[in-house]
Image 1 (cartoon, rainbow, N blue to C red):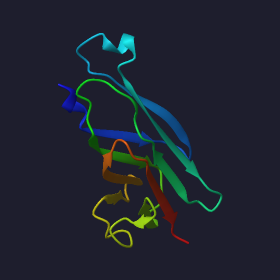
Image 2: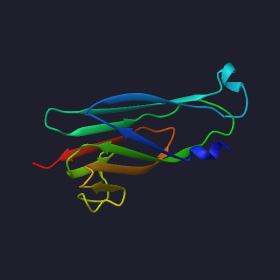
Image 3: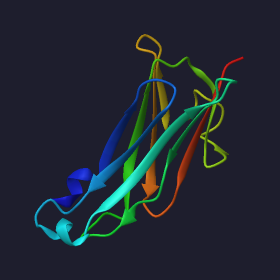
Image 4: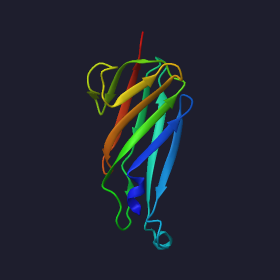
Length: 130
């Protein structure tokens, strides 16, 4: 069932990352005729320590593909942030009150979650404490 990919988790280790997610209907050989999607994800860090995670819109098409899904970004080895924004807007107010973000101080892991319209770009900005 194509809906098993309704929630995806992307783990980011280090300060930069770039990868693509491939998806097809998992049931036919339509992928051989170009019926599949790819979605690019990038993470970067500025000299200030601010981090950006960009989830690009899906490119391509296949039968019964999802229009949106929940995406969890799991950033490893990161200090607790001062502020988090998503597409330029505060993610639920000043962190840690954001409902769509959680931080595990012991493991030093930040988890960012959102429901993504797969035709639109999502840009997370993580601003470090000073």
